Image (tube, rainbow over all chains, first blue to last red; front, side, top):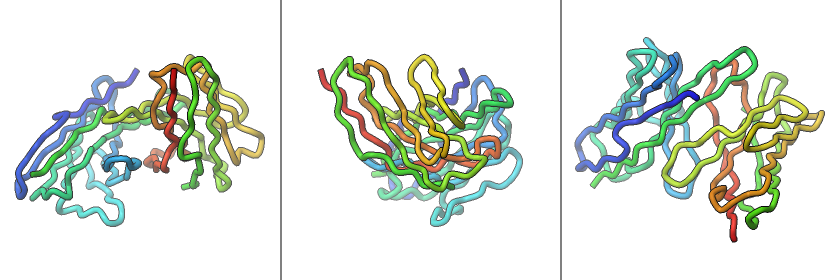
Amino acid sequence: GAVVSQHPSWVICKSGTSVKIECRSLDFQATTMFWYRQFPKQSLMLMATSNEGSKATYEQGVEKDKFLINHASLTLSTLTVTSAHPEDSSFYICSARAVRDSLSYEQYFGPGTRLTVT
Amino acid sequence: LAKTTQPISMDSYEGQEVNITCSHNNIATNDYITWYQQFPSQGPRFIIQGYKTKVTNEVASLFIPADRKSSTLSLPRVSLSDTAVYYCLVGDPPAGTALIFGKGTTLSVSS
């Protein structure tokens, strides 16, 4: 099956610093990737949609200057949390859309990245 | 995107069949119904997807009535390892739009 990886799996950073999270589709090409954020005991919240070679589309309330998304290739999207603050501490999950055939469309999720800002 | 409603939580015992029902009254003609499973500190895992009637794979069955306003995920003979959050999502996968997650159902399986 299709595999999506994320790196790092967890990261601790100091307030004011920036952190980059990578999302890779390992065995398929993904023209579209999605970034979600999940706080404890809550559901996943869509942050942005990332299309290869174009600017990401951010959901309402998500600061595009704070959460920089780059989708430079068909297998890699990155999320950079700039000037991180403790309230940015969360579980960040990416996903990629894979087209298996004309009857089945699946969205595969990465294992997530735990960000802790101290 | 169609809004979904699921029970917040369910309890079961090992070996029992668990049925989780999801309501999606405003489902559109092009929408599919997809279920995901999520364990703590992990990304969601695809379980099953369907458009109408019944779909079965190696881990679950999905029942969709003719009006498609609801669906039921059936997990046969659950085990402790099936304890997780289950999300029902409705959307148009061929369109490539993002999946919007509701609150999900927390299933707790006991021995």
